[in-house]
Amino acid sequence: MQVTVVPIQLSRGAEQLVFEVALDTHSIDLSFDLAAQAILRNDQGRTVQALFWDGGQGGHHLRGRLSFPARDAAGAPLLGPETRALELVLVGIAGVQERIFRWEVSP
Image 1: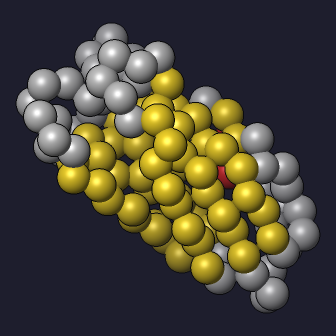
Image 2 (image 1 turned 135 degrees about the horizontal axis):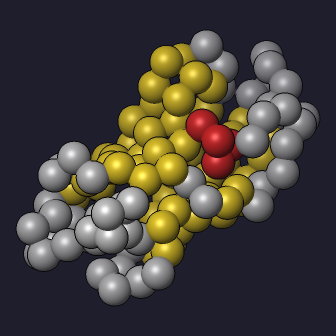
């Protein structure tokens, strides 16, 4: 299975952080809610669950936007002034415990 993730909205001060995700496979059916299996974390340990996936479910090829809140449950920003990296983690897709995509961010 091939998974491609491209950041679309990673601006400090944004209300949501957004990624374009493409899932391509010929071996499994993609019948799951990607938002339920996606988390975003920063290098300070702040973590948020995805809010929304607009790429649908089912089939073998999906493409869409995956959105996350820009602040954690305590109200702290994921892209604060001290943040140097973000990781998008897809959990339990196609038998892989975690697929991790990492981006360095400038101060």
